[in-house]
Image 1 (cartoon, rainbow, N blue to C red):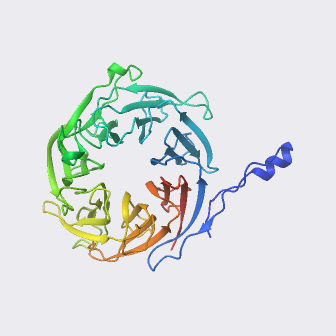
Image 2 (spheres, helix red, strand yellow):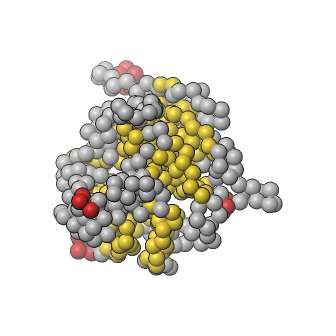
Image 3 (cartoon, rainbow, N blue to C red):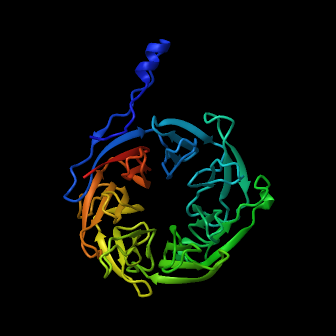
Length: 434
């Protein structure tokens, strides 16, 4: 049923060389049958040996026009080559533990992607800095990569992204720590200095640490768990940032040169317990399908933003509504414990995005629901985002710390890759279409 899932060459190699055949290609398993309107999926586990799968991105590392899978493990950075999913080690034990975040961009202008890794992850250590380093490949794709320091004085380094903030065609590195320096548990992490969200322009001499100069984009928020780029309505550039923090869902609007002009609170999110976890912790923008008066698709009116609320919370929330007004908040699901990943993708090819959610924990003993950790999909059943359907794609097999959505085999259908914390695994969910 699925085209282009490439077979193993093991038998051919065995016949030609007489050597032992490599391990069998991971078996494809059927996912649970989808509700009406959702595509079908099969899944494939390509690794079950991760210590902690902190982060996953999809990037073409070897230049063959196929997205590879890159995973941040506790002490390693590894990648899986598309389409065989052969695992290679990029870095092992050379960073301050734990590794926690990653992004990709061409730093030295050679046309190849380099990687930037955030490490030194200690979630409640607000005194000592984490680390940033960029990685350059060796002479062959089988070699480990060289690492170069990027100066960083921020504690709890947690999320990084490569974003063209000023529209000049070159990406900057954007860093969001989790907590501000000297924040304390006694004050629910809201004392001390607010979180500094920083950008780094790539310097002319990136191999020299002193060449990297950070710019502060925001220093007003607390417990910033994640952020995402977006373009404000009516603008083509620069990119701006939306954040998920204790304050809620905020927007950092940038000026023409990619520096901050203002931070504004879009919605306070879940503030039911201000002395504990509050606000939001994951955030991503997507697009709904809305019909303009002329009968066409007007994507400018179909914006949707999804969050996990409160921080490390039990609610999947979407925000919809016209730009310039306070958005409408709608809880789609509260049968989960510790939502930890949010993404969007047009999984069914209808022009509107579906919401993809990763859940990290199974229900606690006193929870009144039975749905397990894993991957869940949500599909808007109308053009306004007022009614949504749910599909539990993975029910228990991955304690999702992070996930990514992208077309892995060129069939035009976005697939899903999830990595697990407690489960220590990496799975591909192959989109079979409706």
